[in-house]
Structures are given as C-alpha cells and as structure tokens.
Length: 182
Length: 191
Image (cartoon, rainbow over all chains, first blue to last red; front, side, top):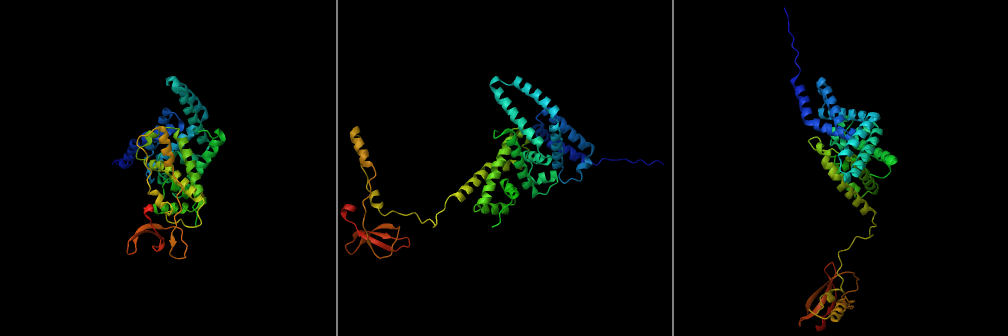
C-alpha cells in the first residue's frame, strides 16, 4: 500500500509575499536608489531581497510587521552595497559621465554639484554605525516610529532618543568632513 | 519642574507622542529655558539632516502608504522650529516686574485729538507747505482738573457730563474702579 503525502505550501504565506511585493517593491527600490545612488543597482538589490523572501516565506510568518522586516533587510543590503567603495565609485563615475552627456550645458554645473552633494551624504552615511544609518534612512523614507521600532527590534520609547543621537552623529561627521556647506 | 529628555523632545518634534504628552511638553517648554533651547537645537539639527538626506532624491516614489506616517512630521518641522524659536525668544526677553496695566487713556490727549486741521483743497506750493507745517502735531496744552480726593491715580477715562441744575458741561475723570476722581468745567472754547 502506498501512501501519498502531498505537501502544500500555505496559501496565506504566498499571498503575503505577493502582497508585500506589489505594495512595497516600488518604494523599496526608491529607498535603495537613495542609498546606493544607482537605479539599476537598487533594482538588483530589491530583487534579491524579495527573492530571499519568496524562498523563505516563513521568515515573515513570525513577524508582527512584515513590511518593517522587508524595509530592514533592504536597508541593510543597501548599506552593505554602499560600503563597497570600489564598485560604487566606478559606477558613480560612469553614471556621472553619462548624466553630464545628457544634461544641457546650463544645467551641467548644477548637475555636478547635486551629484557631489549626494556623494558626500552617502559617504557620511557609510561611515556611521549601521544602526544609526539605518535609523536615519528608515525615518527619512517615511516609516513611523512604531514601524521603525519593529523593523529594528528596539523599544518604541527609544526611537526618539536613538534618532536624536543618530542625527547628532550625522551632523558632526558631515561638518567635520565638509564644513558648513550644504 | 521636571525637564524632558532629548528623546522626548525629539519625539515631540515629530508629534510621535500621545496627545496628552504633546500638550504637557508644549506647556513645559513655554516656561523652561533649557528645554526650549534643547528643542530649538534638535529642531535645527533635524532640519539640517533632513535637507541633506533630501539631496538623495527619489522621495516622490515614497509617498505611498508606508510613507504617509512621516510626511506630516516633516511638515511639522518648520512650524515646530518656529514655535521653539518663539518660545525661546519669549523666555529670553526681559519681563516687566509688574503685570501690565490696562491700556491707559492719556487724559491730555483727549481734547486735542478732536480738533480737526483743515487744509485747502487746491493751493499753491507755498501754501501747501504752510498747510503741511500747520498739520504737524502740536504739543498738547496741559489741562487742569480739580481732584475730588487725595488718593493718587495714574490712568482714567474722561467723560463729558451735564453738571448742576443749569446742566453745565463738565469733564469727569473716572479711575479704572469706576469712581469719579477729578472734574473740570468746560468752557465754550473747549467744546
């Protein structure tokens, strides 16, 4: 006698991952693009995050807020990519040359200055403690304190304190490296 | 008076506290100079960092459901900074030792203000210059009242009344508590 055991993937988890992808993929890509400064690289990282999630849908099963989980994983992946200076610098240089080729002559200076400011901000972010950088990025990307607390695994009343410290550290490092210019 | 921590003030800036706590902190910083200064510093720093992170762009695509929680807070930052600055300014300004009295009504200014200065509708330049000279405010003449008691007072209201059986016009000065304090009879030239 043969017993056939059918293993069925829980439909709820599949749906949760798909819903997360549909609702948050564009925003995750935008967040990652802000971190790494390269749209294509952001798309790649976001694809990796959702790919891992789809392979292990149970990872979000025990999580109270799957959205926060995805933001945390994506932010960590983006910061890791940002710290790989060699690749990032090469891509930025290539992207900068390409932008200058496309820009009108009158916009060229503004484009270069904006790209320079972005590179400065990213360099300071990369030099922060991972938790500080993640906190600043999640907050600036629109997460409420409650979502930040869940994403980072910290107590809700601590978010204000940690955010204030992270901002102080960011300001101190930015001014130390680049002075008062914004 | 208990001062608030940096974390509480930072949460207050983002309005990420219960309404009761927000009201309590707002009431506290209006009378606490160190907390108002801390709030001002935190607000300026938050704006500085926010503007730098804003350089990274792509915020337009983050305006969905997940981003909605932050946008009101970002809009609060300039208002909160202004409120903190005003609170700090209010605290730092020297305060009078006595409570400010009700707006005084200067007695001497009452009568001259009712006297109009007439100017010619069309006049040569020299006459207009003379008329402008006449139109300049003149120092009011002192007006003397008869005190009705010996108690001094600083401000009062002048009211025109009819005095006596002949209903002579008279000006009576009433102090803020409603008591008549001084009187003068009004001649025809003072009408």
